[in-house]
Image (cartoon, rainbow, N blue to C red; front, side, top):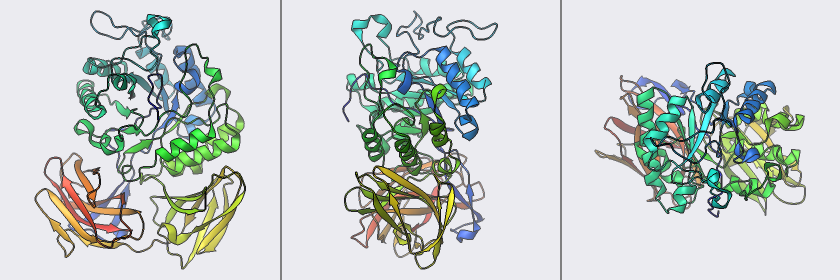
Length: 547
């Protein structure tokens, strides 16, 4: 994806520095039977709204108040949407003699009695008064993304480089709940994103320590430098989410009005494809394929439903970008479908993977859910003609010798039980989204000190690990008796490492287990999995089990 200084990135951030789908075992020691495990619910991908797609850099207090009000009145807040994010355009692009960002008092006036014009805390209080959360924007470089010198100094937006600690402390003092950090300035200066975003992470940690207020961290680097390989432990702590691609809506041009910005269905599909990195999305880390364009000009109602389905199956942040004050009933129904939202928000936190392809453009995607034996399934027709698509239970780890129940999530209708497979006709450039419920297949287990596992002081290696699929679920049993999450790097067959966070399992040395997805060589029955412990001592990996 081309990098240009005008691009804006959808941001979202989440709760706490990490969110984990954790199986805590109730008996100390080694991994117990599945019946002894209990799933600990964790914060899922964030849901909300962001200003960029509809308002570009023309945002002000009235726009934000109108969107916050609409989110509550139209039922989106009740459905789970909670973040109202102020993107590029909120600042003047200047700093005062003390280095503080200058805020336009006319664009951000006092809202309630006793407030001072030009204080961003005003709009935060207003958003919070609606029961919602507030987000803010900056750039990791010297400049922001709307740098148009020919339009005068008002458009010469500055970034936070050189002011990281000052700016993030200010964001926390204003009361913002998360911050999106763009990369236009950093890209222009040819900076190293892993280095700069690590500095940002440390600045955020200092701001949180100083204020006691959480700033949830969204990296918007556009995926050019594979942030899914370094963002989970950037600066010694996980980023919350990271962008995996450029914007769905094309870059803005000078003097463009927001009403002229069109979404495209090919753009939706492209961003979805670029956002599939299942090995990185686990234990609370989420790939971000950009804010949604559901309901924006350029998409039909059917395409908006497919868009929502794609984001849900991939456990992506659900940040709407359309003007919430003008949503049609059909768009609202798409954005608030509770069963589709539940797929996205499932507490296991894993990303959907493609499990079957039929010819060109007929695909089956599956997402493991926290309820054993339950999968979300997407049957996607990318072609220009209607076609029947079949899903086989064995393609995603369910027993195919017994009946499996099927439910249509958009029709919100039970379809019955089916043996071994289910077929449905899918219209051109459309999709069917299902929940299937059956029984789990068997797992292959390996112990850290068994015939196929070796434990060292800082490494644990498992050999002769078999998998019949390219991407398989992996359950890791471990002990972390400390209070804080511990980090480890996993390499499968020497591939690029995946950083994994292991939350505390308690001080009583009880074992816990987390599910991740790993990339295997299905042609080899002797995959090698190496865990390197990279944080403080106290983490002990006990065993693994492969789907």
